[in-house]
Length: 417
Image 1 (cartoon, rainbow, N blue to C red):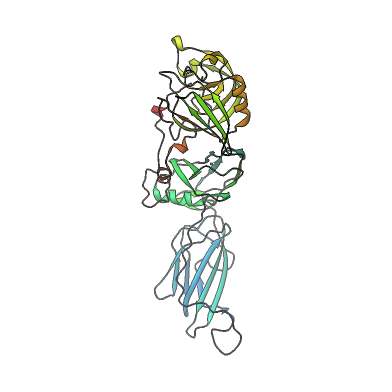
Image 2 (cartoon, rainbow, N blue to C red):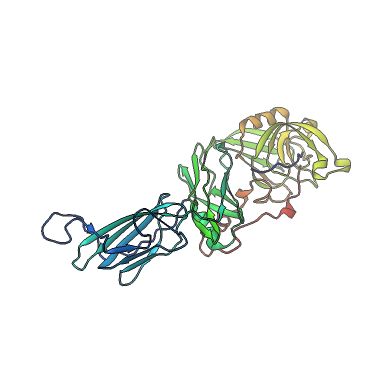
């Protein structure tokens, strides 16, 4: 059966640390024995000039940070902001000049630590704190989804951007700043759905009873001229038991597993000829204990028209594919396919399934003559891409191109009800 579509409701990252090569190994203090390398580092403030000026200065983030030695060599420079993002830089061959090679973040505080070596091999230090001016430009916002809560093990994480990001270089800046951590740890990757939306999923389903933390370190980072990252609200998700369903359109049966064990096998009916149910893995989007389903909402008329009140409806696609109670077709359950694309079953079985599942639970249909579930655009079909194809949608993969991943072919999203 069918119902009108709903509106659909998002690691680790800062700039990579590139330190100047050490001119000489730093030696710990070993006592005062006359060896110039054994003493505590001296104050190199008079020896080192920093383009940020004096302690506590505020500078323009569009200009590179420069460190110059007036005497001796620069051995090491680290510059890190309050978000823990290190600034990459390059040291000149003669060791007298260091310059940042990635843009400074806007509106943040940096701490710069400089190590030096004079002509006698003595080690010097200088530490400087400075601010960068806020960016007077557009801000790139990020909204993570779904809402905080507990989900099934197939729930993807989503990230919606406030502005389009198309170039590979800009996408890399954004993707590096979006962090997903799970406990227990699993391998995962972002995938660019289009220029404003990313999805994150692990290689396999999330472990049962895991915790997933999602955050952004994009604030203040320059994405491109006139566009800087904005603050983003972090997200925390959990998974419940590993519940999954396998619906066989040919065998007219649905097997439901909980934590790897089959707990129930349900007689079903799926889409009849001309309205075949989509093959592939779908992810539960929501549950409605009662919904009015009308054929007119998806352009079905004539002898196929219907207007029914449906109980215990578990939504699988935005176009209106559900698992639901279908008492009017009880003679077809386990016998023949007679629906308009939904998976029908008895009222008792539908309520049992409704009570067991939650958003994020995977439901896979096999042996149907229907189309393949689209990866994007009609719910969460993310699991219908192989892990290899999924990783190809990441801007951080080697040789990433402008395409940035797969997009849904909306012309193929024919409603099946």
